[in-house]
Every structure is written in C-alpha cells, then in structure tokens.
Image 1: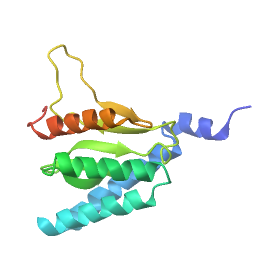
Image 2: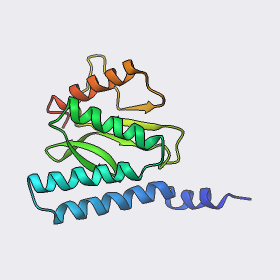
Image 3: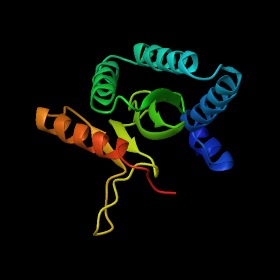
Image 4: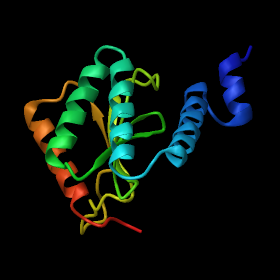
Length: 158
C-alpha cells in the first residue's frame, strides 16, 4: 500500500512544506511590489523577519535569533527580508544568505545557506553553500560570522 503523502509528492513533485514555501515566496514578492521604497520598506522587511523568527518553534527560534543578531552585527549592510517564508539577508534586493528552520521544514536540523550572489568562491573550486546548525560551539559561530562577513563584502557571482 502506498503512503498517501508520498504518492501526492510523486504526482506533483513538491512536498507540502515545499508548496508552502513557494506560496510564501509568491506572497513576499507581491508584498514587496506594494511596499514603498527606501527606509520605510527596509523597516517593514526587518519587522517581517523578526515576526517570522518570533513564530518559530523553541530551539529554532533561539538559533534564528542568534543568527539574526550575528548577521546584523558582522554585516550591517545586508538588509533583513523574508526569503521563502524564512529569514534572509540581502544586498541590493538580492539575498546573500538565509536561515532555514529545520522544525518548520520538517528536517533533522536547521540550516544557514549562501546564495550564488555570495562571493565565497575558492581557488580549488569547492566552497560552502549551506551549513547544518546543530548545537554550534562558539568557534563555529565565529567561523559562520567570518563567512557572512566575506559573503557580504563582494559583488558576488553573476
């Protein structure tokens, strides 16, 4: 006997969490188009991110709060904005890095990722695009902060 949710995912290609993220992103884009420009828009985007973090389940909420504090401290030039319904940080409207709640995504751990806009390229052709966040040590937080600082510092890939 087939599992109904798995069968549904096979038919349309997306899990319920993925469909919810797609709908959230569409709503974000619609809201962005309606918002004013400049400081008023930035304040509204930041408030949306903080509200989304406040809604997260225990554990992920604390991690997201720490991520938010770290990103806004080490890379104040990045503007908070929702990205697929979860916290993202953008330069010139393009998301550079983002947090994904493992509990909201029904995954084993939360992640912190970097978009193709983040200039983390290395000479050997291998660089990070996402990290699992599970009981990070202080040195891991420092390392993540350095990556965010590096990602925020350049023009990024095309």
